[in-house]
Image 1: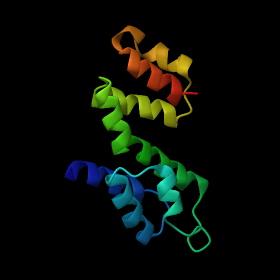
Image 2: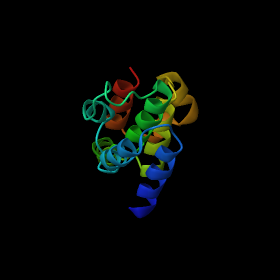
Image 3: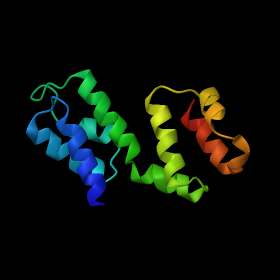
Length: 120
């Protein structure tokens, strides 16, 4: 897990986030917390954060969302594919674009249902 923690820390250090938030956000992301939970965990008045920096946090939170990855795993989606799906979602990708990148026949029926819901 150290490699993941290093990746998270280094990525957050490249933003303009205050040092305290880098540590707090890094810990929450590494624990698999959702972006919504992370947003609720700090006072935006006390810590003004740019939309660009929040976009980085959102992207990391999607990539390291433990419950989402466990759900993907349960329906037969491997970690590398899950990571690519989350990256596409974070970049605003659509369901149509998803099926241009991935062969739909490689996914289980349950996986397709989840992906259809995720990209609504």
